[in-house]
Image (cartoon, rainbow, N blue to C red):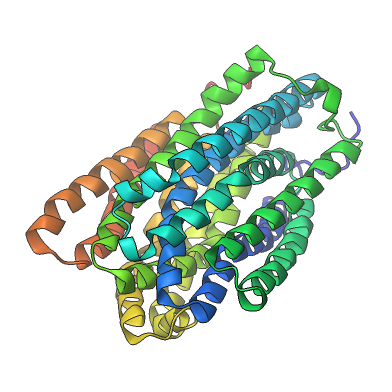
Length: 448
């Protein structure tokens, strides 16, 4: 088997995970720049109402992207297992089945998203003052669904085999394109929030195309061949078994955040803008954590595929410790610098107040969120995707929504929306701690 990517089954655990995670960190940074650049330029050039329109769309977009990225990363576990086991034939079957799935999902999302966007925003309680711009942003975004679906699929394949460098290069290029197009559309041609959505779609299609050509030209066992793109039913069953729980988990959690957003919307445009600005900051703050958890999933998948249980266990310990410490350090910085960070998006005093209140309620508890994500990523890498799905759905969806349904009518306070996050992070961390300590999570790890 010819290999141009070094597997994570040999060498220093620290170096393998760190050098895999660093390009992921930079790549995720540029990925986060897509929507953040939109928000920065929209907020500064078009004002708080336009920023609220973009922010109100963010939760719905996160729900759909979360579903797709969950499926692609979960399905990538299959690729990483076969790659670690040096099974070239099944790597090929998994890659081409994933791509076929992505093409079908992208077309479906484009049609459904464009048709249902207005009604969904109404269900979310989006204020009349911003709903027209919110609909325009969402419908243009969904027209380019195939781009971000295929990007997630392609990156899931590359990361599964340990290639985190090429996605970084492609995101750097597409982020620059997004920035230039945002400035041209909004500041020069005055196209409004629709121009911000168009810039994101074009740049996402560009990064997906670059990943596509990388998979076509590689000489490794995961090479993509257009003539082989089809559904292998047995492989599709494995991808669904591992990937679907991760996708459902992400989308259900994001759906709960859509419910949270509807509660935020009830407090008006300033609350929407302030909460939206904080959400962008939190997205950046958690990039190092997301990078390490992705590295942990790939590391666990490849090493269990190679039958190296002790190395898997040591890597899991290192990953958990690293993410928890990083998260708390980042949380302290966000807590202290919250006013300046929120003001970068919108200098309106009321917007800053709402954003700072949210930041100073949640930031010091980032360590709990990091622990939950770390254990979940280890379990997904071990092929046990259903367990984190159930835990996170229970704590971050059912309990979160129930808490808000009871507390908001009683208190009419936005503080209840702020406090529900650290509360549910703590609950999930407790459940994950006891499961991780008591369950034999490395058993039954065969990819087949």
